[in-house]
Image (cartoon, rainbow, N blue to C red; front, side, top):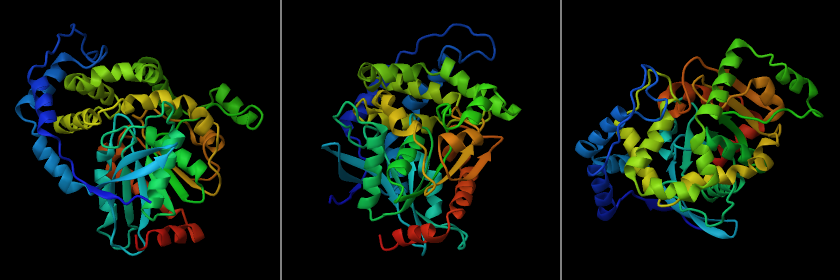
Length: 407
């Protein structure tokens, strides 16, 4: 078994010089004049891009960011074999000193990254001595950031789930719970389906399902066909349909020709910046302001991956139905969900009960928040997650506590 090695971010001077030169020589093309309120209709506006590029060129200091990240996150890498190849997996691992701490794996998606877990790290040593503590593990998806990219052309979500499970086992956590959204939600669902003896529960903030089976769940399918939704459900489902219809071009490109688009994005810091910044605009509440430093840092992390993994996951997801979407999580695994109105993955609880999990123990619909709750409203997400974990009781909870000891 491979032994985890400490990891420190240290971008080479040559790479940093290349990025700096590309930013200094960036050409920001003009936009057309849009009516008020329609500035983002064709993509990221020139004015927004110019502000970001000016900040990147004149104020952003990667070495200071690098130093902060290295001091904030305890990072490691470890070799894990999967599908006949060895992957070097990057992950954050913060261990709690509290007795009874529970192992937690946090799973990110696109265009996010492991930095999303930062506001959850306080769960390792909570201020309230009575609050449940956690050992937190946050891996980077293979091919993302500092995790090596798979060589196999069909490295599916199921294989990523297997890598994550093996990582937890390598760390000595034979029982664990999970939290995540976006691709992380599908990875965790696959873990719950494939490894129910180890995965005690998953809490998601992004829930999708295929239509119910006409043979197994005819009444639920009828309810869905007749569109008997509450006004709130109609709003959230309508937002999801809007995203699929008007905002999903990126996924079509990445899902068909991931290598081609990656040449453009990985060779252009400004192109990657525009690609990421445009997509995150509509995924948060209107009053949430993305920090320029955060957006550029996320962009840098994607540039540093050096592969098409960030795009290729969309093509590998063609087998998602056979691995996740047509399989329900068994009653042995606790399932919880927090639904935020500005997210773009949503189904009502009654649909989830026949399409996702047999044992839904927690479900909450919120009035604010979006696709990145760990960043946008981490206190709300944390409170929900803690409440979810409290529903896991008896032998399963004791097994979680035992798994967290002496690791």
